[in-house]
Length: 272
Image (cartoon, rainbow, N blue to C red; front, side):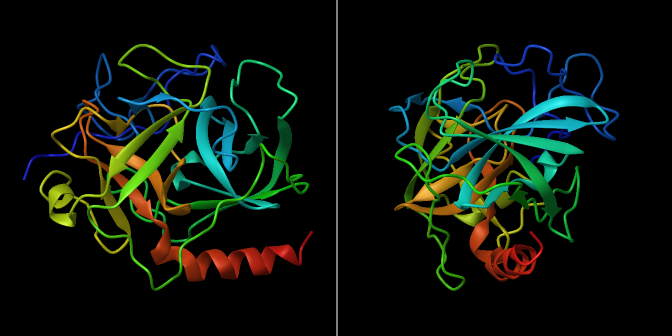
């Protein structure tokens, strides 16, 4: 089994927010000098998305003790966004309806987060398990052609290897080049064994292996928390991958967390 690269706590600087901090590694003595680790999110081998063709996409600007960072997320109800657990912060601002995040677009809605609820069994690096978080918005999003929730999977229906899915994000498009506009890429779900051979802590019950190792297409640095959408249903959440950005990458398996998602949204809806 090849050893997974040490993982990092924060996304890299984003072109729309040049003051975002550089990567730092968490509890990983190997991470000295130039970092070799990341949480996934960069779109490699993709293309610019048609404006507002992914109306569920959310851009998260996160304040934490380490400074500002950015993540992806996605609207699952007018008052809730789903993202990765490692995108936690003391305050989070959500932008919906964006295509170019460096511009003030008429379709954009900016909403602050009322409550960030990370899964109670979330494990930070280096293990990274249960990497999922619900964000309750301070006000409900207004539905429009540019802002719509995405469907969530049935608790009993598991996405299968071979499924062709889409990932979108505003992360880096190459090792050093960022993007202001939403990118998309089509990726195929792989067998669990493909990731088990590569990542020490891969868990087939709660994670999905995504991206053909023979193709230079993947999610990578910059937009952890974005969705893996298969047949118009959000099946996964961008979590982590290899230090080189070569596929496959690991996504949180949403289907395994549907009871927790439904229970949490029901409980918090009565607390507005």
